[in-house]
Amino acid sequence: MKLSVVIPVYNEKNTLKDLILRVKASPVKDKEIVIVDDFSTDGTRELLQEELHKLVDKVVYHDHNQGKGAALRTGFKEVTGDYVVIQDADMEYDPNEYPILLEPVIKKNADVVYGSRFAGGNAHRVLYFWHSLGNKFLTFLSNMFTDLNLTDMETCYKLFKREIIQSINIEENRFGFEPEITAKLAKMKCSIYEVGISYSGRTYEEGKKIGWKDGFRAIFVILKYGLAKRK
Image 1 (cartoon, rainbow, N blue to C red):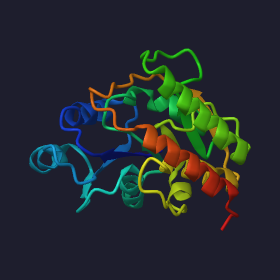
Image 2 (cartoon, rainbow, N blue to C red; image 1 turned 90 degrees about the vertical axis):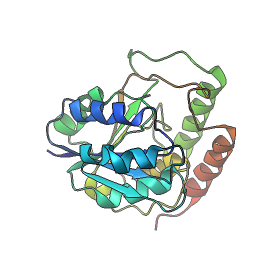
Image 3 (spheres, one colour; image 1 turned 120 degrees about the vertical axis):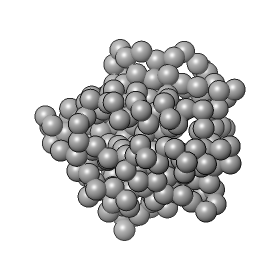
């Protein structure tokens, strides 16, 4: 079983090398690493070009900033593994937990696995009550339209069978990717599992990027794809 790790990158110069090394050291032997640089302007692109590209299997460079969803759309086209996992470059999620995500695949033949920050007893950093409440509200609203019982729709850690994620037309360019992909997976009647993961969230001072505007966009996206007929 080969695991493809897609890392969308935008201005992550301070954490990217450490993240790549952690992914390479993670306890899954057969894996490939695909990075999509979404037109970073803080030196990340130069770091990739001069040093870090040798540590990964493929780097794709966007010629202008488009957003996380667009970077993932690009990355998914490049992967060759049996399964694909999304890995943010900000060190909030631990690559050592890939086996946790793969367990429902191995034991239950899952099509998709979500890593939930709110399920189970795994360690998580205590931050931002209103941000956490917003995440739970968006998950609740998404569940209303998808008829799923997820606890963390907005999680970064989503793992897919490659043929499933490559068959989906991803339309959202920014953080609207999360509710969009959830709605489309639900309409495909995929076998979706959820597992508890740890989480070490960043503060906005440390570089956290998602904000209230993205939350309002997520509500719009939930309604848009939740009410849309399956194409």
